[in-house]
Structure formats: C-alpha cells, structure tokens
Length: 156
Ligand code: HEC
Image (cartoon, rainbow, N blue to C red; front, side, top):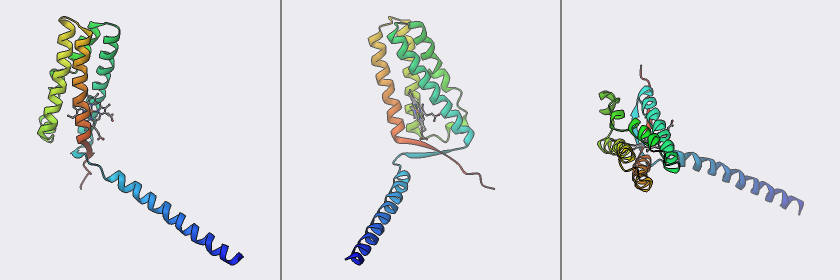
C-alpha cells in the first residue's frame, strides 16, 4: 500500500512539474505571438516617436480637463501643440521607414488635434469638442492594435 502511494506521489509530481513547464513555454510563446506589425527603427528614432506619443497623451489629458472646466484656452493650446505643425519635426529618413497607413493615421491624428483647437477658438461647444476627441481616440487605438516598434540591433 505504502509503495503504491509512493508511485502515485511521484506520478503527480511529474505531471505537475511537466504541466508548469508547459505553462511556462506557452507563456513565452504567447509573448512572441504578437499580431502587430513591427516597424524597425533605430533607438533614437523610436525614442523620438515615443516622446511624441507621450505628448499626444498629455494633450488628450489637457483637452479632457478643458472640456470638464469649460476652459477653451487650454484646449486651443493643447490642440495646436499636437496639430499638423508638430508633424513637421519628423526627419525624412524616419518618415521613409513608416508604412503609408501608419502615416495616414498619424496625419489624421494631428489634423484631429487642430480641429479641436479650431472648435475651441470658434464656437467653443464642449459637446462638439468631445465628439471630435472620440473620433481622434479611434486613430490612437486603431494604430496601437496594428503596429509596434522594434529597435534594430547594431551590426558590426
Ligand atoms: C500612427 C500610429 C499611432 C497613432 C495614430 C498613435 N500611436 Fe501611440 N504608439 C504607436 C506605437 C507603434 C507605439 C509603440 C507600441 C509598441 O512598440 O509596443 C505607441 C506608443 C504609445 C504610448 C507609449 C509611449 C511610451 O513612452 O512607451 C503612448 C502613451 C501612446 N502611444 C499614446 C497615443 C495617443 C494618446 C494617441 C492618440 C492621440 C496615439 N498614441 C496615437 C503608434 C501610434
């Protein structure tokens, strides 16, 4: 009887051990299984774009607060900051590496920020600005589900 339990315990340990090994393997496979298209950039290029991304989010924050506080000046400034003028800072060598659909979404996003600034300067209707913000955020989520960045490994 005691002997049988010994085998049973050993068997359970093997199954449990194998199970957790499989689970670990599965986890790292899942991490690699990224459906987004990788855009390969230099570290400096990636840092530039990610910095712009954080500035996008900063402006979204200010615009949301501006809507809540009926503060059209803040919306104007935050919108213009990330408008088409901000896109001019992208070097041609970086622009060449970005897929056309990426650039289209990025352009629509910059235009969307300008549109909110224009609305804030014009009639200043909070609801209209909020609707534009919703449309704009759709660009963010669409692009985020399609693309990721990868830093090219240095070759010597
Ligand atoms: C044209 C494509 C595109 C658009 C549009 C876009 N993003 Fe991004 N964003 C990316 C990519 C690609 C990354 C990096 C994702 C990765 O590598 O995993 C990123 C990363 C970010 C990050 C992380 C920054 C960091 O330091 O790691 C933030 C925050 C962000 N985006 C905010 C936004 C916001 C807010 C908007 C909309 C106003 C937006 N993005 C629109 C493509 C886009």
